[in-house]
Amino acid sequence: MTNLRIGHGYDVHRLEEGRKLILGGVEIPWDRGLLGHSDADVLVHAVMDALAGASRLGDIGKLFPDTDPAYAGISSLKLLEEVGRLLAERGFAVVNIDAALLAQAPKIAPYKERMAENIAAALGIEPEQVNVKATTEEGLGFTGDGSGMAAHAAALLERVG
Image: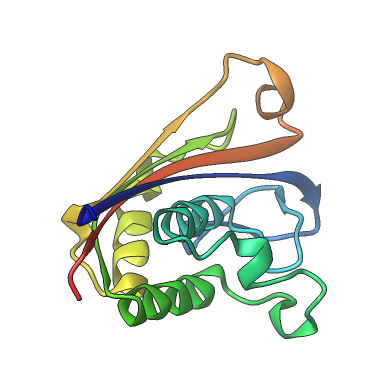
């Protein structure tokens, strides 16, 4: 059995007025936020799905169902901490994470480093092991017209136990 495992995660949320915009655990000033059962942090959700996939934990819907009131409004970084605990329990260590946010606006560049630091801290790894990038979709689709945001993430794990 190989000691390396890779996973891919994807998540999407609709933008709504009256919600805070939380991305990578950073509250970003914006006129709308992402709609979801938790804080709807689409970036962290994609990261969790990548980690869950690489370790065969399933996905965030299985781990943290939106039917459970315990997760209503919860910080996605708290959920990510739990994923990190489960990884360690199963003998996995994070090698690296590469995540991409798809959003027409707002500009994400000023916040990317803090997002990477937050994700790393929640997992107990170094910020250098986490890369966060963002792109627009040139006005195309639901992310391009500003009705939602999406994120992709890839995670490489190493079995250490």
